[in-house]
Image (cartoon, rainbow, N blue to C red; front, side, top):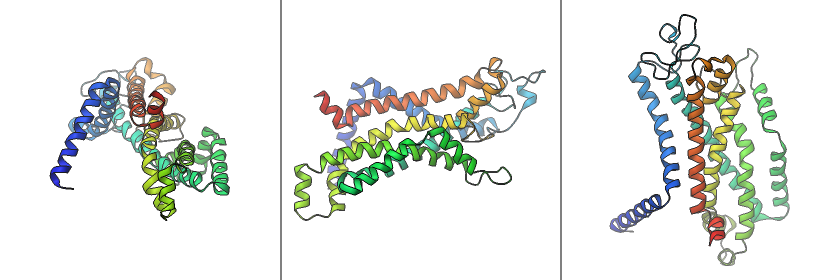
Length: 311
């Protein structure tokens, strides 16, 4: 392909994307919110450098009143501070790092594992399909919170320290429960696709199973897998916040939206400093809403099953 042809194709795709964004306001809003969340995460170190302090630095003299209660506004602290004198705005921005650092890898790993298992189960059929389907059913049978609490208990060392980084543990717990949705959808699609003429023709031409899966079946699954990942990502972000809220995920003083909300509720100081609760809760809501809106609109445009049902 010549450079001129590649440039024309790139320009055509950019034009198609611009037209799609103009015609679908919900997609534009969802994309704008997601980009805003990413910018919020990226701006945290810059804002920290401008302010001259980090998310865990404590300033009780500047941010706590004479009774030791946090104030909503203080010089240099736009949203005030928490009960330890830490900047609420800065901690909220840094909390997005945890949500994205858990949600994105957990979603990618879930998609890879679930898609692989679904491909093998649906294509191989027979005993292999039965075993892998049973494995999926067993994974679905485990209670999420009970399993999470058990894993965290096993992760504690003799001195009360953690054996494995809690972020990695949370990613593993979420992956353990979220790969099944990919596996079940992909398996069903592969069973339907492997009987299509183009797949039968490829197999009749002597192409190996791996080549058929990679070049014939997987490209037809890709839009659905992308949509599933977009739908699963906000679910995983909420799961991380839930685990942190329960004290299972990220541990203080590391800022995460879950443990910030938990701290605000435990101390009840949100009654005098409402931003302790409002800032992380609003950030979590906007993030989940943006990703959900984007996923819904992507499903409308990319998922062939939805488009086929509309037509």
